[in-house]
Structure formats: structure tokens, C-alpha cells
Amino acid sequence: MMTDNEIIKALECCLIGEVSFCDKCPVENCIDCQRELLNQTIDLIKLLKSEKEALIAGQETLQKALVEKNAEIERLK
Image (cartoon, rainbow, N blue to C red):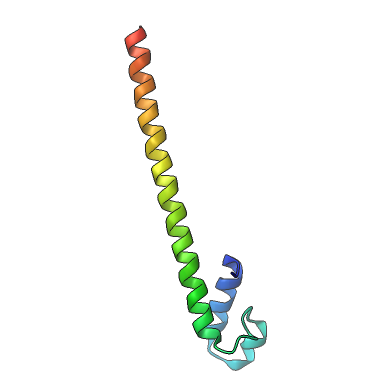
């Protein structure tokens, strides 16, 4: 899998749309480079989405624990 920076660079090269930029592209040696780039981009988006969801779930868990701890502190007072 390409890194996020490689994917960005490849997308920028494709956006320019000139063959002269292909030698600067991280996927230049791929036979079906645009399809490969799309697949890599989709994989990165899915990875980032799952990481985001995990962070949100972790934040919700921490928030719930904080509420419970504060309730316990108030009860002990």
C-alpha cells in the first residue's frame, strides 16, 4: 500500500493530466496506474474512516468513564 503522501502526489500528477508528469508519479510503472491509484485511494479512505470511528468510540468510552467518576466523587462527598 502506498503512503498517504504518495497517494496525494499521484493524484496531483493525474490532476495535471500530462504524460510528462507520469515519471514523477509513485505508480508510474503500473500497467493500469489510474485503477491502482483509485484502489489505493479507496483503501486509504476506508482506513482513515475506521481509525476515525475507533477514535470516536474511544472518546465516547472515556466520556462515559469521566461521568461515572464524577458521579462517584460527588457520592463520596
